[in-house]
Image 1: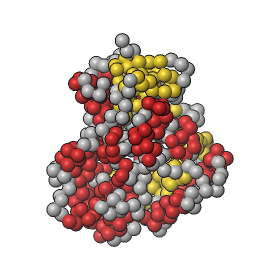
Image 2: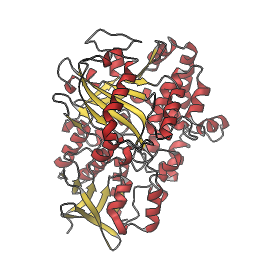
Image 3: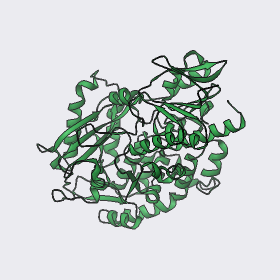
Image 4: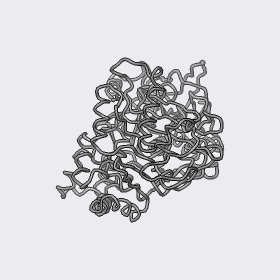
Length: 523
């Protein structure tokens, strides 16, 4: 008799979502997590006393598009979201600024103050591409079979094969698309910077859909869990345990046990063995391959070896601070909180600026002028910091894992964090004043690998290019969450939709496992 029905390796948010659906369906689940806390890259910890730092994902921008919170009744387990309306704030070197709101009219008013013509172009852009964006959402929420791709991307009216202009736009790079859509540089910078968060640079062909997703921000807005991003995974953990599941932390897995070509459990690094009817790996696909060892078929190993991780992605510096940023383009009184502080705050004045940052990255160099996103979530959630204090998280992109200079990230982390803050200070000068920073955590590509299991510091696990998406993620024969070993399933950012809608990979994988368990397939 196995120890459980389903054994999950890793307690990242996708694995926990998967475990939640399986436990809710009445199956006995056990989750093994190598870190001291469940959550993977979606955790919140008190690194500086009194300040709550998210160690991984911070913005639950797209969780509104999934039924996960309602399906798993996570509010019963302590998850409460704040709905944020101001989404993206971008100051520009000439002193102007644009704020993107959930409300389209309010957004167009902000754009019109900088570029009236582009306010109307933006409204048309949202209307023209909203059906396709909605189709992409549905595609992300289902197993990426050819039937589902056709059903949700084409047959719902999102993509019209008869419209040559539409097809022509889709196959372009998002840099080309945005430059041809808008007259000024501001909107291409804002939309392009968000598109680049999945990884592809503005020049990559077939990357236009990353920008064409943008209309969905006006549908979903942005949400933040009260108490930090990690409150999602803690609620999931409580939900799983309430349904009879067990989560073992500080329990790294040494290998996946395979007998007669079928996964039957796992052995932990301290020598424990846990047996299961089926196994689900939420770990990085390369980590999963390592845990399978010689039990992984040679052809599958070759495919996984070819799945590209890339050379890092970016770095995150998390600060405990005495005040909020005071932007030269939109000054505020000390202690005041305004829309720009609730929004994600961009330092990326043009697509050319982003192109240059990526060019440095390709050479294995640290960007001379890094593109940044600042987040001050304590402006909308005071529970994250002591009264009158705040958290400031700054994400910089692109930063190589392996540097052409041969420098070690542990040795240069503080230097680069200081340089990022200085760049940000060109737009919000108060952040560089003595005494502004109370404490900080530098999450370099090496830190992300070592602490969160994100190999080579890639927060998406694998590069998000068209040849590594949908049914090709992580490889063609594994695109439906079934591993090439019987009884083993995959979830997490290595699988469809990658770093897309939060939790979708876990929900999709659960649907496949439930299907197979009830029908005796692949088990």
